[in-house]
Image (cartoon, rainbow, N blue to C red):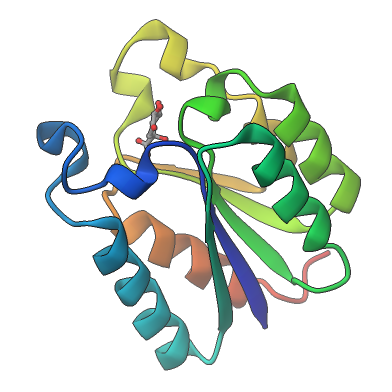
Length: 145
Ligand code: DQA
């Protein structure tokens, strides 16, 4: 199974940005953790991070016909981006939304998620383990279309 893991704006600043909320693990260390887990599970994983909405849309479009699943943490674009939602709907690839922090326990504006409508599941507040849980979910339900 092929899974694309997409991270949106400021997630490259993990380990530096608000460590009380997002922890001290860096983006590089998260990538290593994801690659290791993918290898253990026999998942072919591709990682992508961008701070730019259009680049995220491009990455989603390019996944069409290539990827079996998408794990996506759109960062702040979660709460604003209809373009990312539309891209996800356009490609129709099975997807899980991930947030490191518990977005429902924070500011009101973080409770709104546009991307959710294109995802089978949301994992929020499980720290970086959420990415691994999302991969396991997609791999464990692979036959579902
Ligand atoms: C986040 C939560 C978002 O509200 C925030 O803008 C982020 C990270 C999370 O992983 O908890 O950048 O998606």
